[in-house]
Length: 264
Image 1 (tube, rainbow, N blue to C red):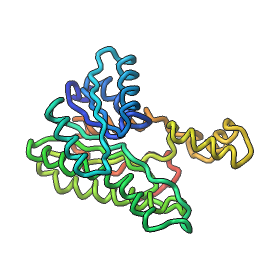
Image 2: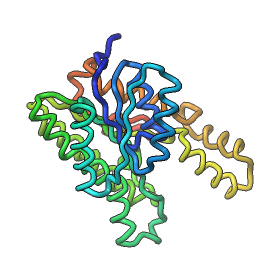
Image 3: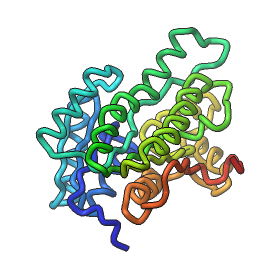
């Protein structure tokens, strides 16, 4: 199946690790050009080296920026399009809100969660989707998270940010459909990234068991019997960004393996 992504320019925020990095590898495999954005120059350089080592034809650009700063995010978009070409696809995968028990939430914690997750996406999407609309084409895929669908008492601030992103994704999809721009989102459940691996170490200590035992116990609680792989999330992202998904717009795709079976 030809996804028609060859030579397309894909901008991936949070692209130096985890799902973002897996997305970069998947787009490169389709012949796309990729630009990665992250706060850490060192992490970006490591990601660039690993992608080039795995794919000798990979065209991978990197740029460091703090996307919590609206001006810095817009400047990043300016530099990327000036130096590397117009962006055909935007994948937002940057930022994650800290998990905080409800009783410990402060006003600052709520603000921090929105800055870490919601605004890191919006600060890039807002200027770039307008340019896509002016050009008459483009695709945005937001990697959000299942926490915006079901409230968890230890993830209320982050879940609220996720829910806000879902609404923004659906609304922007409707607003820009007539201008040739599609906006979709995927909501991964537990995905075995470096961040989750670190969390499993903490869970193992709390339970007084080995990391392997903690992972096995967590896997048993999932309908498919295992965590998702970053590459599996990336496959869905690449498809949604492609010409094969040309009539999919405003979709919020659940990717938690039916952990929370919901109709809406």
